[in-house]
Image (cartoon, rainbow, N blue to C red):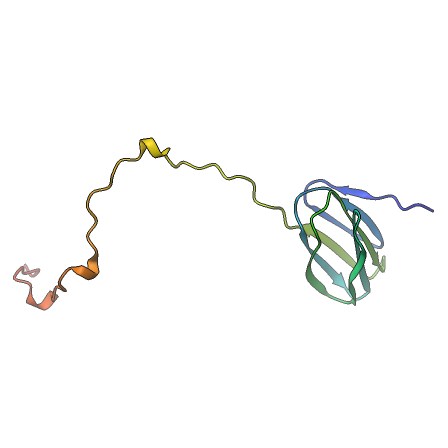
Length: 133
């Protein structure tokens, strides 16, 4: 019987028992968490790549795994249905952040900046100003 894969579209998936997931994005790593006392096996398969089973554990698990860049990555999760819940949190890449930087033609030269190390040290005790009333 052919497994039916659930698409991870928002960078996060969760469940209990067995799960078959596919992620189509630019991220190359994810955090896998299992809470419970049952088995938790994860197989990662990339398009054109080798299958890898980096997680073969039981009990409480919190691991990060990565894969080579690909057009799709498939996760096969084996887990005891009644003995724990799991999550997969894709490490989404940061998008191009907007910048408020002016263009080079808009930059005004700064006032002369003095290096504090080049200035003579001032001894506060030698000050002639009084701060007392």
